[in-house]
Length: 208
Image 1 (cartoon, rainbow, N blue to C red):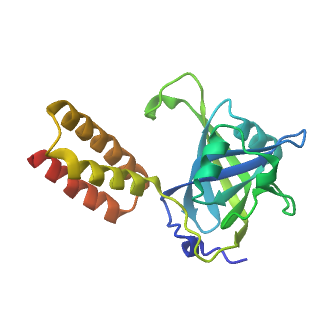
Image 2: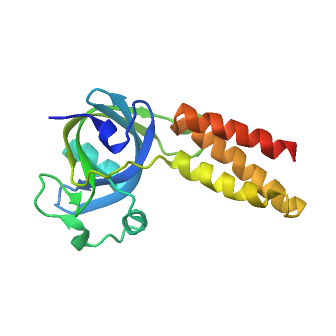
């Protein structure tokens, strides 16, 4: 099995957004957008809040699929829990998204339960750190690329900067707050190049 995840743009210790697909003990398919981090070799990790169907299914079946896609409909419908049966492929060992550019099948190896005290989202629900071993890696489209949301934050910040000098003071404050939040995310999930250009952009914002 070829585990060169770099073929779909995945780098070690960075976080990527994809669609997790799972199946319940009753055979009901489920899809939801989550992030995962590639730990190197054949290991990945994801963080899921207590209470999600995806987590329940993963703990039961001890497996899940990471569907590598940038399809806005699939991301939206899976978040809203209205991804129809027609979106699922019926000839894979566990549920995957039909025509997904690439997917990774993961076996759950280790579950570590933590409190959310060090996370930006506070609450009473525990967070499950799930480490998995890659069982299979399939590329259906050679142009497939995993999505790192730091790039989205950078593009938003660049777009806002193009308007920064011509908006009123309240809007400038709003843009600056968005910049800081995007930088927080980038520092957590993105590569060094994106972190460096975001720091440069912040300096330009603060000059004006």
